[in-house]
Image (tube, rainbow, N blue to C red; front, top):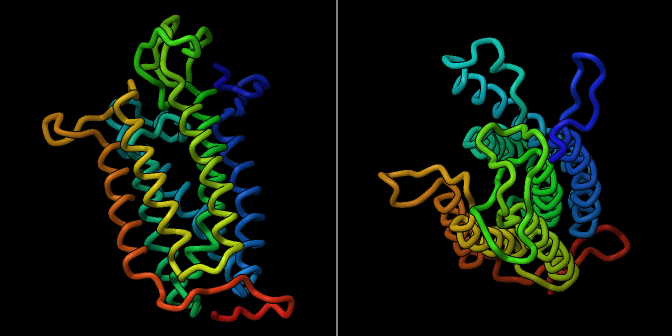
Length: 265
């Protein structure tokens, strides 16, 4: 593991944070390109993406500090998002609510805007999974498979096992999200109903997360161990994706022509 990318005296640059920041930049570029393809106003989409990044990170940091303040005091303010556990998913939920309010206020078509965001979210998730691998978060259960990985360095996550062959769940997630990224781009360039692209990502990514949850060694149990946080999150994504598909627009929306205006088939 390489939880610290650079260290200059007391200044530590976490690998997870750098990769997530890089992921946001690349995902933003993908989002803007997808938005132009669907005829969405670039400036409003830019504002929406920046709002999502700022609110998710800021709220996750506040939740993380609140969760660990009793045990760590002021140090809780310095904890990285790789140590966030449930704080980051909650921060993302808060960001989704903020983006929904902004999209309504700005007059952005909700389903089509969601379609523009879907490939970017898949790519960001893939890059963030590599950051988890370097930080030691999202680690797997013990495994004897030939591709099992062994953490040998100091971990950014105290609970990550050292010297034990583990399922590379972070790599599984990264590969899954990269495949979804490619599939979503292909779907985006074909005629599709509004909401289908985001629905596809939510359903397939949620299903993958729920299935991979059984291989994760950092599972946080809920409801007396009936299911884990990851399984619950995956199930909610599957339900949301299925609802988007059921309620997708009746007309298929084709990619915007050269003039930048979308047209319906």
